[in-house]
Image (cartoon, rainbow, N blue to C red; front, side):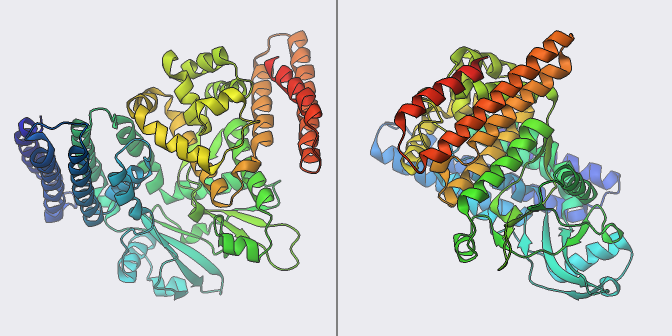
Length: 528
């Protein structure tokens, strides 16, 4: 297969490279000779990956159950993953972004690719201060020396599209300055075309892994992530939306110093949300921390429909000084948000409630409404909850997540990789960012050792019920129907409150007989 594919790869690479380069030249785009280097580098990498698999795996017959075959296959994966990593680091920009996505596909791609590409999350290439100053000067038409009294050379953080530095305005205000990499804007269109080419090559090598959804989502999201003015507007919107959460802070945006490629905001200090040393030394309650995270993201997903979709630990800071009664949580990096429709939130909420009460028919019904084929509803429920089917059927409120369960879950999912990619290929596009958010929040819970406490479970359930009620009440066509929905909602909230009281008592006393009564009541309420 690969042998037949190689001539096509070469032909496609060279023809496309000439065509794109010629078009850029004709349009007088600022790609000049560098675009040929980037295109050639990509084409050569794709050819080398294909040739490696051909020489090591496809040029001879193998017993695919043999130990030798698995060893050679693993070696081929590792060699090709290193080649892909070198390409991402060399071309930077969108290549880094896609490489980071590959490094997050823990259940969908060979381990060698995931572990190799994962370094891009913390080892993205840096630009010099001079290169950053050039972008600032181009966008603000001012010398950075006239804008800042100080500008630290060492970045606070470096990502695929930008890096952040601490600085001080002329009035002495400490700020964080986010500057887009100078090469991103001029190369983004060509980079996306060629990264798609590489990923489609990978799909030829791994026919079970349907990565078209990853390509589409990267194209869809990267435009918004490149516009820092939109990021600033998102920050202000979420700050206003959750202004009643006194423990939540969003850095202020300085609009006079901000453009589509430069964003200046308040500088904040603290510990990362998964920094156990900081959490313990500042006497931060881990369970309270996870409850707040669950509260915030449950309201985003189920109630507001405006979801911060990149809650990795580097984007959530904690701060608690001696004398503070409560921990302050800072939400950073607002470039990527999901805007969920009412229809999506309704079916997603109903799916969660069906999972809680173990109603297979309702799971199937609402999974189908989200684009999942009926026979895959069980697998989709596992993806949504991050729990094995056995735990779902026992009741996810009864079976606590554990490290051993997580290991079993991770070991079993690769056996269903083809079906998982089918789910991701056909599911409502809105679900992809929500699923990513769920995974990141769960990873934080595991990092702080609170997964078994299920701190956000009750507030998530409450938000699901409230979301369904709000949407059904909004669409009710009679006063009698609205009155019925109102009474049902109040009863559900009361039952959930009683259940939360029971759980708090359970932590102090052993009362198994009461558990049966309360749990039965909760299940009856969810079924209504």
